[in-house]
Image (cartoon, rainbow, N blue to C red; front, side, top):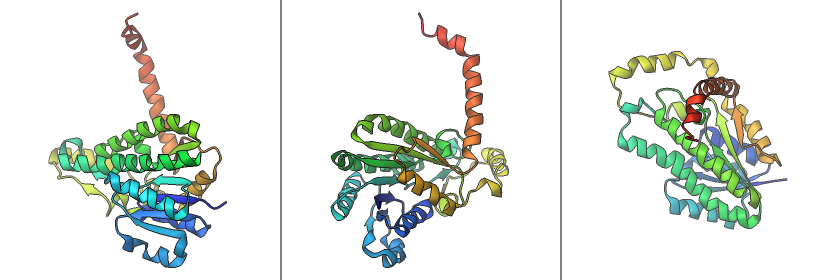
Length: 272
């Protein structure tokens, strides 16, 4: 059965790939982008099935207006995909105040505003699916991406809480956890801090740990996202790529070992 999708960050990367995949199979898509020109080709190909919407997700009022426009145009919104966002590369000490604020505005607050705008529509419908594009770095961290890591950890906490609050309304929430993929995210979409030589060894070690095999093929994610959207019982979290789950299993095993080691100290801290 055809669905109506609202997706942010639809101009490139995952957003564009998924938007086209939805349209190809007959879904209707409200595609939110900063620059409407980026959707010209898709608009010519798919016509009225695609509703291009110009949107800066950091503008809360504009997010509500965009959701309302999509609802009015298509009559309903089955799925919202919060995909807009980018990464700031740099050590924690290097990050400027404005770089930190901009990262949080786009990755956290933009997602929050779109989510808040969509919830009344989905509650009225008695159904819906909110998909938050997080990252495997929302569950474990790597150096040189500290403020990005932090933004995704915020998305994780917000969305896991949301899932418990809206389940009774018939609304599902899923966090997508991609590992690295060969999109523009780490290239033209990235922001780089003003470097400090003290962190050169950390950055070199980080780069040395990344190989060509570390990056998945973006186009290969479409099948998984279509399956997720079609699922009657979607999971709270879905890894994309072959690296994420094995890595997170290792990370959590290490965490559990340390927590167990310190469990006696922790228990005594309860005080009774």
